[in-house]
Amino acid sequence: MTAGIEIANATKSFGDRPVLRGVDLTIEAGTVTVILGPSGSGKSTLLRAINHLEPLDEGYVVVGGELIGVRLHRGRLKERSERDILKQRARIGFVFQNFNLFPHLTIVENISEAPIALGTPPARARERALALLERVGLSEKAAAYPRQLSGGQQQRVAIARALALEPEVLLFDEPTSALDPELVGDVLEVIASLAGSGVTLVVVTHEIGFARQVADRIVFLDDGVVVEEGAPDDVLDRPRNPRTREFLSRVL
Image (tube, rainbow, N blue to C red; front, side):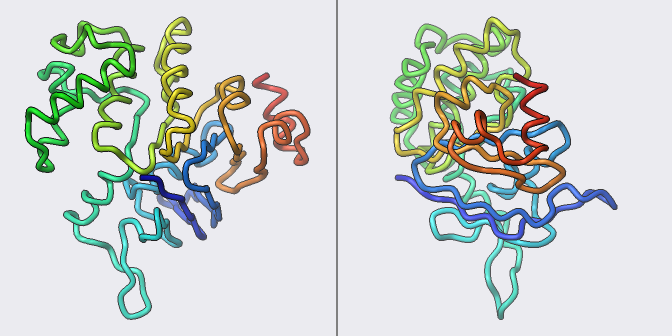
């Protein structure tokens, strides 16, 4: 399955510090969108708002035609129950910067745990976990524990774990930022292999080469506002906004 994303007037502050300032963004189903921007621009907060890890102060997110984290009640948006939100998050995979694997579980158990908790028979969940490990090039690590893997291998396991629930949308929050440089390529290769698979991918990253090769669309966020968006060639080679040009001149 695949799902598009609509973000409308996404507004969020932490205390008196605005982080998102009325972001409007439409992401087509099955596409790859890369979000660029300087530190503190609101990229991670926007990503976390998509699956309601970060509730918005104003605005809303729709995935596949369904409001995420809230429902419409008598003309107003009301928070959904935690049970409903967890069900929605099963459709929206999230890969964090720091892997977040369970250290006491083997790799295959890390991947199969959530499907089993949601009712998948253990044998079937394990079979799918092994297939996903093969997909990310780690079939020989099924019985290992996270501490026995490199950072890059752990991140590939985290991607497999996110895929185990067969999500419609997959979110990546700077998936290579915690890795040594020589491990980055393997992780980016796995993410690139998901392009065109039908899953809608949204990737926060500073890897400009990856963005150029894989993204269908690039969004440049600065100070909680979408400053520029468009095809990779347009944004990276012919940026219209001076702030985009300044940012790219620093990172390229």
